[in-house]
Image 1: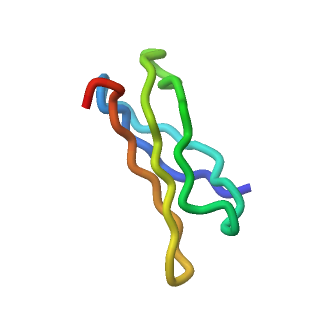
Image 2: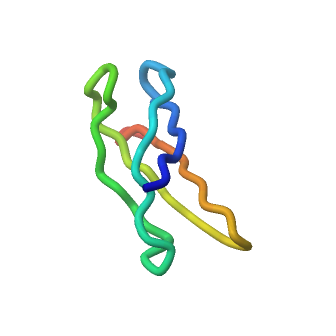
Length: 60
């Protein structure tokens, strides 16, 4: 299982999130920060053999 680095938009701590299967990308994940527990949305995208994630706060 591949873990993607994600930086929380609230506390700016970085942690890993399990990547969904490539055939399910792009994907929006409703997630709570593993450090500060604030809610966020994580967009997971992929292309040309790469998979990456970007987190956004729910108020953004």
